[in-house]
Image (cartoon, one colour):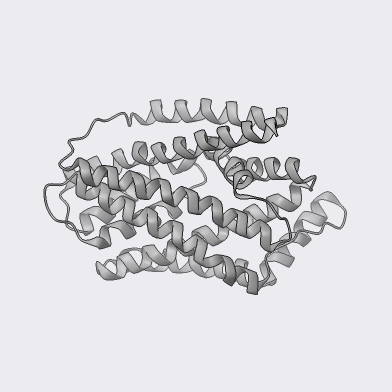
Length: 295
């Protein structure tokens, strides 16, 4: 592991602790069903594994053959970089690790990492919109989400935005820069992997909600997580979407029929719950990185 990448990890952990202390999210909730809670954590962990598989598939489709161990290591070790203000450090950190392992340009891998982030947002917004449609709440968010989704569609599936971005970067550095992107056919091939990990996270959040409520809840509740997650990622100011994701979840859960107290508790606890998944993939990443070093 490069020294620079180690600094990414240390700094990200510091910012994570600062963000959590400021947000005051250390809440112990009342659990009605530990069975559903355990089920939610299992689905959460599976979602993180598929998240790593989707990143591996993106790299493989760009002719960068990496194994699942390196994919998990790159995702897991940089997972807390999103809590560093600026929103680019997860993308750069993940790319830096892969570039070091494959002797590739960090710029090239960062571009692919950005492509993967756009696809993540695109799929997450579709699932979130489906949830709002089923709850008859599209009118509240319709114009905002539609504009964001159309913008992402143009970026992912056309060359227009890509060429425009390359032109601006080339002008800024005063030289021709070639930034790769996934071809249309390859985007379609990797989409199922992105959909899979969002689906597992939807199910995980649904079971979390069931574990914390004494009442039956609709399966639609799970679709609130990708909506809140994607809009949280797009929130440039809040590190890791802290505060933004919780506010959107609160609105969505009340729309789904939960009372304010339940919705508030679940939206706050969901941050710590998701952190268990992040720590899970971080620990697995550390183990795989150690194994790679020994080899």
